[in-house]
Image 1 (cartoon, rainbow, N blue to C red):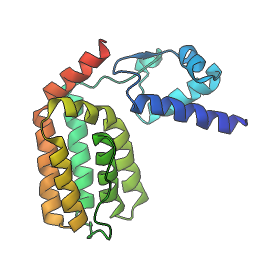
Image 2 (cartoon, rainbow, N blue to C red):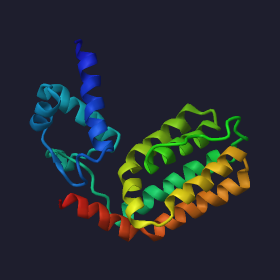
Image 3 (cartoon, one colour):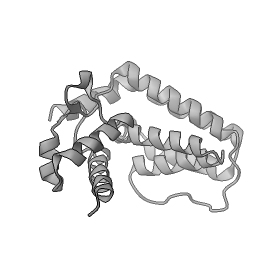
Length: 200
């Protein structure tokens, strides 16, 4: 396997571990340990971790090793607010969808990511789509935690799907505002749940 192909395999494997929640928030990441788990040498593992640090899925505090980020309440509020602003800009360009259902199955975090990418794609801007894709990645484990802390999420997501499919810009912007305000109000509970995962 070429060095480039090896790097992409290692990068993809570690990123999937992060998105699947196999490495809880706050967990130190030992390149040698990860390398043994995915059958890779330490060099491509380190290279992949540096790339993931650039994507903010991993952090390297004081350049002293790697770990999975553990968000503070303030940081999560900022992330929700930024997600809301980015999607709010895109929502102004949403058009009625030709398909009546955007996604039928999957986890809440997967369905939410698909819906929000659909909103971003309405801008026809690669930068907008990339930004929403990055936010989806960074919020994957947060959205998984929301299921444990917020009631009736499935109904909420179904409502979002309906307004996105209809292409109703005003209704969509209002729904996105409600979506993010609800989560900002529940930040303390979501962070507490994420911290409980880090202690297991």
